[in-house]
Amino acid sequence: MTKAEKTKAYIIEKTAPIFNKKGFAGTSLNDMTAATGLTKGSIYGNFANKDEVALAVFDYNLKKLTDIINSDLSQQKGARNKLLVYAEQYEKFLNPPFTEGGCPVLNTAVEADDTHAGLRTKATEAILSWKKTIVKIIEQGIKDKEFKSDTNAEQIAFTMIAMIEGSMMIAKLLDNKQYVTMVLQSMKKMIQSID
Image 1 (spheres, rainbow, N blue to C red):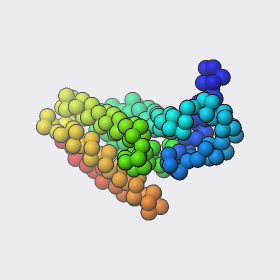
Image 2 (cartoon, one colour):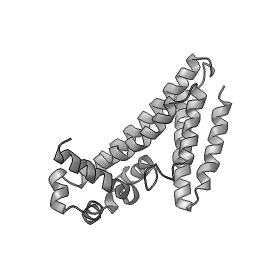
Image 3 (tube, one colour):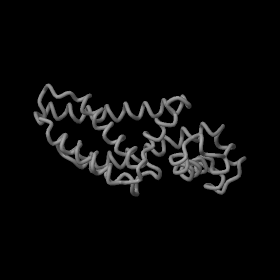
């Protein structure tokens, strides 16, 4: 890794929690310089503008999240157990080692849906990729006769995503992590009832 690549990676890592907590509009250049200890010139010597930093930070935060989930998925046998990974991991989501400030997909989707086309595209791609992963798990479960052939994989995938993201939103808004657990317990029951 070159010195410039190391500096970019450092800027992304140090500003990631700030963008995830404050959003694109709420994160200032002063926030970025305070977090990194670098000058404005140093930051903009490595990134064209704040948009470029924000897009790189979204990718960083999303990768951090998906790496944790994918690591657990790879250790499970059977589609049902793989689906349960989502409930089990997201119950831990508001605690380390997950990203500070909550779910980067939810945070970005809410802020950028009408205000930032680039971030909206990133959030959209993340949701569709997530759905695709869950659908593949369910389709494998159908193929392995774990689930019935008429199981609606897309419906289950979007329901799971909505339950996860909705529970995060409610828990953060009401400042009570128990709401995540409450909703995800219902999700576990739903997963166990798929036949």
